[in-house]
Structure formats: C-alpha cells, structure tokens
Length: 350
Ligand code: GGG
Image (tube, rainbow, N blue to C red; front, side, top):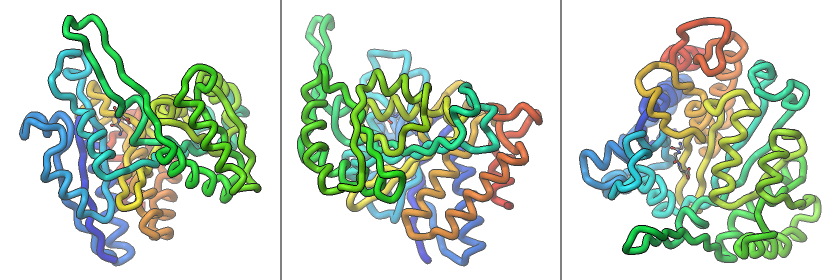
C-alpha cells in the first residue's frame, strides 16, 4: 500500500516523540511491504518564528493532500507565560482542526495490566478500566467569539454549539458504544449552561436510534470526581470540546502517565493522530519524554487506514516494552536512563 503521511512535529517534546512514531511506521512499512512517504510541515511556535504565522499555507496544503496526519504537540513556556503575545502557537492546531473539519476527537483510556502499580489510584480501581472519550473538537468555547475591552479590564469567551455540531459527534459515539459495552455517558453542565441543555436535547433525540445503548448523564464536576473514584463505570464518554480536553488529561492519572494516551481526530475527509499530551517545554531534548502516546497514535492511524495487522504489531511492541520495563522515567522505577529514543528503538525492532 502507498501512503502519503503528513508529519507535524510541532513544539517542545513534539519533535522527539514524533520521531519515534515515524521510526516505528517506517519499520512497519518495511516489514509489511508498504510504501509510506513522509512530508514534514511547520506548525506552532516554530512556524511563528519562521513564517510569522502558527499555521503556514504550505503546512495546510501538505495536510490536505495527505492520507493521514501525524501531529506532535504545540506550545512553549515563553508563550504560556505571556498573556500579551499577539500570536499563539495553539492557534495553529485549532486553525488546522477547523480547516480540515476534524470534529471528532477520540481518546481511548485503557489500563495496562503491567502498569497497575504505576497509577496513583488503587490497583483494584484501575484494573480493567477501558473507556473512550468522544470529544467534540471544532466548536464550543475554544472557537467562540473572544473579546477584550479597550481598557483591558473585561474579557469574554463565548461557548456556542449548533444542533448539527452535536449530531455529527453523537452518532459515532453511539456507534462506538454498540461495538463496546453499550453505554454512553453524556458529560455536560446542563444545570448551568444553555449550550449543555442543547446537548442534552439533541443527544436524547438521537439515542432511540440506538436502542441497545444505555444513555446516562453526568455533570462535568461530578464526572471529574467519578473518573478517579470509579473509572470502570465508564464505557463511552461523549462531551464537548473543553470538558473533553480536561477529562482526557485527567485520565492520565488512571493509566499511570499521560505519556501513554493517544488520540485520533477525525472528520469526513481528513484524519489526524496525536498524543493527548502537550509540548511540555521543560522536558525538551532531555530524552525523558515518553514516546508511547505518539507511537500508539500511529497505531490508531494504521487502524484507520485499515491496516489492522500492522496496528497490532505496533501495539504488541508497546505491550512488550511495558512488560520489560523499557520505558521512560515517568513509568520506570526499575532501570535508569531509558531514553525516549531507546523506547522507540525497542518498539521499532520488536
Ligand atoms: N498533542 C496535543 C497538544 O499539543 N495539546 C496542546 C494544546 O494546547 N491543545 C489544545 C487542545 O487540544 O485543544
């Protein structure tokens, strides 16, 4: 199979972890006799530095013409601490999601048997956790109107959702539940927010089309608590953009490290794959960043492209690395000095 993959390493630890995923994809192409070509593009802080925009036209064009996109991470401390920055690296990622209409962000959270003692939670609470977050990705407060008064003393961000935006993420979430444990939990703040009440109305209207799936509801504050107290109760979590962003980062606590969580961002025409974690600037080039989230994102890409056997080969490599403690320091208490590259090498050679 011939595939054209766009690679956007981004900022901070993004380039290091993405390099490991590309290495693994190259090994898979060799082993299974595929031809994968990789086209690189700048995005985020590195793009601002070179092109004075977080999402250059050239990058967008590479992505539009690719079969799939592998994304790293975005943002740097310099921008994080400067509230007056005229441009922000994160705009590059948000603009890209919008331009490609990547509305469904799918984030699996699966507890590895080998890592049960790495979780901050008790083993018996974590064991058998297997949930998936369906996060709406192109609407809500991240894309709403932003205002700052002239005197700089008042600011607002508005949260808007349309029926269509809710419908098009609700269907894939229910379909996913049908193939899993047949339970959808809609996470919202319907006791306070009008936009959440629209979510409830639309999801309640769609639910009867999936009679084998049970729908229940949870307010975001309660869900943040329940995710830690009893993660096993969840199957598919369906939620809006910002709540999904926060809940999926929280889920890193369950599995032992945010460095394990992968994601797919899907639209009707394009597909992008990226680790849940951000750019974690302080760790840049120290060799301590966990590449597994990026490598598992590459596995999700292979799944999406119908290369199931290849995806399994990558996941088996990850499983073996965890079993043998070939992991970066966020997970490793057994060996010192297992670097980002060494983990990538192991999974590449597996
Ligand atoms: N790989 C994910 C990443 O770079 N996240 C940084 C970030 O700020 N993301 C915003 C978002 O996911 O909405």
